[in-house]
Length: 255
Image 1 (cartoon, rainbow, N blue to C red):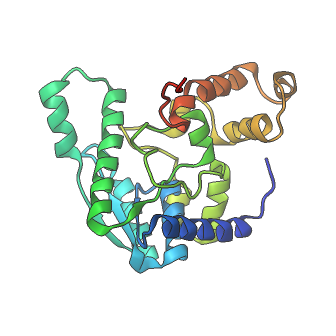
Image 2 (cartoon, helix red, strand yellow):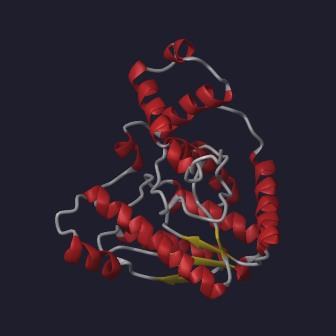
């Protein structure tokens, strides 16, 4: 993996957050706190940039969410001393599926939850006149492990240039609660769901493949000497099929 100075990254991100707010004419930020590592690190960096009085944490549990997710999110908010509130998205989500899509599978329901959360965050952003800070990391953004117009909808991505394994190291430096650092990463969209099980690859493997593929520009022959052909192919397909999530919607060119 690449070797970077994470203390320098903290300073870089803090200045980036400040510049984004200045250019947009805002002074406050909203972060959706899931109880996971990415949103916790993002919230901490936002506080370092503009102070705890200017950062709002919002917890958006669904009725089937694991209780630890909410408990850990509250723990982070209280540690950072930021204003926070809990809004249960169950009524909004369930009303839609009960009336219009009773036969929807678990993926559709998970995507709907992610988009409902972002709808609430953007409504609150209007209420508090605050920008929505994204919580995506480079690993997940590159393979499209996010819901378009759901958890990837935001004003900017403070940790969008860091691999997942780097985010974990950053959390240790920031001194975030161990309950957040040691838990298995999960979007908590359904019972028992974990990121690595769903992706079919560990973050350690994913990050190393992405690093060698994207940063070191290694070709497939070089990659095969370190990773299985199956894992390399999986990552390549995920990158290719999620390209649309990383770009503005295309439109025809004027002729």
